[in-house]
Length: 80
Image 1: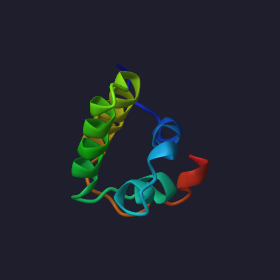
Image 2: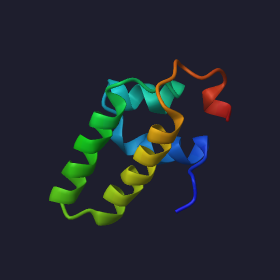
Image 3: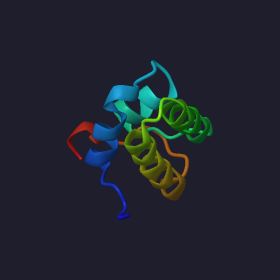
Image 4: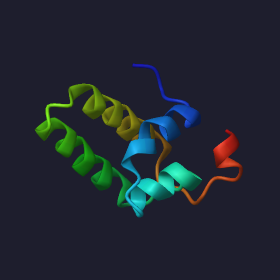
């Protein structure tokens, strides 16, 4: 797996906007202490529905988030 770009992260999260942590990452690039757990829940839900490709994609986003660490909203995030 190659590291995801910012644009790929947004595209991967588009269907998982939750009005909370995942939406913040999608909309602004913000990563908080709750982002990893929210991604874990979303992955678990996809696994339970046997949506393996979606779970793998969320796993890639999780790797991106883990590598990036906590951060405030990113300037110009939608255009990166």
